[in-house]
Length: 529
Image (tube, rainbow, N blue to C red; front, side, top):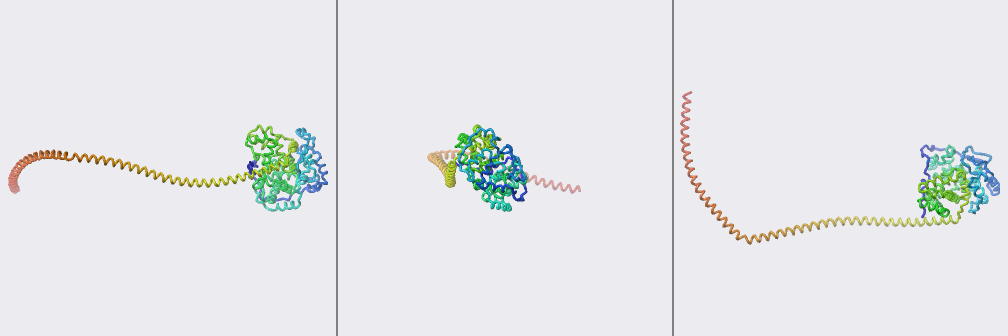
């Protein structure tokens, strides 16, 4: 399967503090620093002067600790210099112990970029000590075939234009090549800014990303801005790095895919270990391709990588990557995920400390047939096509699944309505059954009552007659008692009437007596008055 496409932003997780003390947005665009490096270009610009170039390539270096700056020809130098630790070149007498063990320099016969020289002879010099620092400003443009006066003039015109990426470039300047003194100065940052800005205007589709700064940095340390810009354009176009920086970096995915299978070809145990630990190539190798190893590696190593990259093309990056993995395989095979990933990102180069030529030698010992790379490209494209077909099928299935889900939701809604209606009907049915049961109970009770009444009616005449007789007897007895009592009451009434008459007579007498006494009282009262 095709590896997941890495995010370019994720490839540059900066270890330095990402402060906001950026340079002013109104950055001036100074004229590019011209050097007599440009004039020395003509010395070796034709095949007829190849012998002179080889003679200079074969000149032993002054020392293993190379003082490197923005180099020029022997007649002139730039104002700014910096010290690069370690030795990037040297004769066979100054080679590291690992390289001295290697005695046979193979001729692999890869297809070289044609720049008018014989590949085996150049490769011999590249393996021994690389391009001398004083000649890199001349040799690199020659290798890249970048000399273009019109492009240099276009560069100067682009500097006068504004780019939408200027703020982003300024933001990245302070966190790019933080250990290189020159790029922490205003001149160095101006040079980086100018080249990145000009390229963002020159190639609108790619625009800008921080990796452009990392690619341009080594160039600016060896040649003037306008020549560095021309070489950068060639690296992007002729060396086919441009596709790695497009909004959809399919080319970067392709190269990571190729590296995965090349690792499986050359170091199957290592690749199997990576797969068992869940390590994918894009987790550690993306920055190698998008920065030409400049993101993490020391400059003396990066310069040597540029030497062979500009000579051999993108194949050189694969060889360097495989050489690093091969030399470190004993360490890689014993590490697990976290430590393994950290080692791949930070410690792969430790084994080549002070032995840069050994890395280049190991890289040239690795053979990568062009047919194998082409086959992997086709295989990648087939996998991508298959993946795209699978994605389309998955999208189609997702749409169908969505439609089915919508249908299921609709059916569930209908089912809920039916369930509610069923619940109501069931409730009504239960209520109806309960009502029927109640009616049945009531009917049974009425039947029992009717039966009881019927039985009662059958026995009622005899009972009524008996009860009437009993009542008549009772009433007769009560009547006799009442008659007797009435007679007694009549007697008492007669007696009472007699007594009332007597009382009335006595009252009349007493009233008469009272009247007489009152009259006598009144008479006595008058007499006393």
